[in-house]
Image (tube, rainbow, N blue to C red; front, side, top):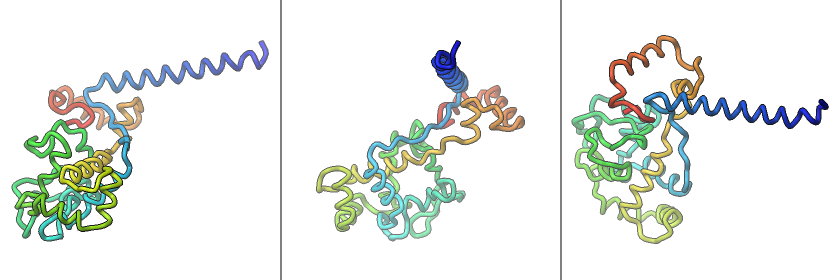
Length: 222
């Protein structure tokens, strides 16, 4: 058989092997109660960029010193690493701030689950007297007074009027990009048996055997 005749056969074998490996990896992940985190898909870059600016802007607080990032600090794992978060007038809150990383994968937001979506959650701290201590009306008045924000909202939403619904939607769009794919555990879930240590694997098996996955499952593990 000539080399030219072997080429199509080699290509077919290569594709078949790749398909088989892909199927095995998918099956491996599907067999586990926890699934790998996947990268975020950005559908509207302008909306995400606007949300990022709002997330870091302390002017959405009464004092002008507190932003979303104050309690959900992206340089500290998406939280503030405090037992109880500090809000307006240095008041300590009743609980600590959950991480914003992978929060889009949660079934609900806030520790008590009172917000179903990230957008629902985003408006809460702004108007909470113990957190950012602003009001939604004042927040929108501020945003509407900044020409740069007016232009960015119009570019992202296609209209001239800024609303709290648009602001919280933008913040949520940015937060949806804050995922952490390709951790060592993600790689193990996708079939790389060397990605985690034997001790870590034993811990995961104990985690499953103890029934922890009845509540802690899916991509978020929560």
